[in-house]
Image 1 (cartoon, protein in one colour):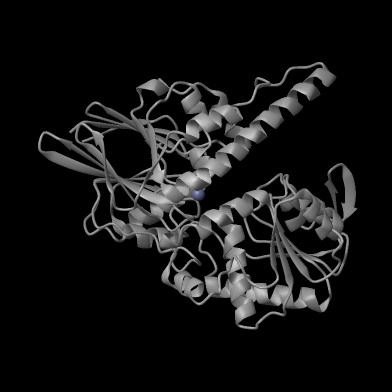
Image 2 (image 1 turned 180 degrees about the vertical axis):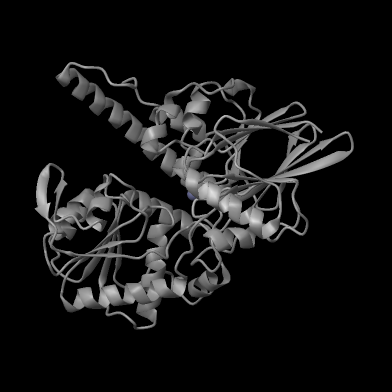
Length: 468
Ligand SMILES: [Zn+2]
């Protein structure tokens, strides 16, 4: 057996997922993600350490930009093969990659103007990493597959996608390699979702694998359960409506926004919260919600029942999905008891900034965080209790109540990751722990060694390993 596995991203860090597999005469990439951590962003600009035109196919686990965001660059630099992914991932990736390309173009324009004004040069070129045209060319290569379908890549190499329960259309991918009468199975976890998450089905369990790459984003933590989420949300909404204040919710456009709608719909149906106006004010979240509507085939049983009973979380009384800027501006005139869900999730851009300006200095309002807030973001400043924040160049005192719900993570926690691995009936030859901060990855690797006795490795960035 001779299989080469190269760790080109999400090795001792969280973003930039990219793994290269070489077996027989086939070269594959699993994911091709953008680096989002500030200290690793220079890697986005570095040339690929291989010729993109020598890659036969890309297997894409899901649409999140840290897994898909370098694909337009790969295509621009010569990749011509197919990008296999589920059809929901293809639909969402088109929305997200086009948006990412627009941001790249705008960033380059701003940078160029700023540098001209300041008469200096920055560390990176003032051209976009890729353009909207590059993203369009990339999207034309997206090739939808079904869960469970065997995808022959060639020369004894094949792949199968399975539901990861992380975001709509997300996958775990098994790659089988047959050489000289022997077969090896490589299992790529992608991002592992959670059991009993709203809308989505549970992560797929696997009974056998020779090599496993497992993510470890929350490998040293345990999440609150989803029961708690509903109760917390009900409490926050009840006190906000009592005070006649708005609730402003910064949210990611994919999965988180739809989950918040799911919980709201449920609480309204159970009459646990008063009737309120809900605005989903994000063109991207609106488009992604349409993809959710078009894929009932991916719902769990609970969600299917809701739809069959006419109780869709994407269409309940009081919900307005806002696309136009005029409609968005009109929301600013509402002074009480509306929930406004908008992007971006960490308040670094988008319409949420306008809604914060209108509400953050009003004591009767609530800013509700439903996702992780990275260090250095406006969201993190607010969560950390800043008395005053700067939004779009103006200072605003923080008088609104600040609340946070932690239980909505889309990633498995430590015990859920162990639960996923425990599906294996016999020890794999080796488990590679990837996609986590270095300390988290190390802790999770130790935890796995202790609990399973298996051979656990923590690969370095750029490391090449030969599998036998
Ligand atoms: Zn993800």
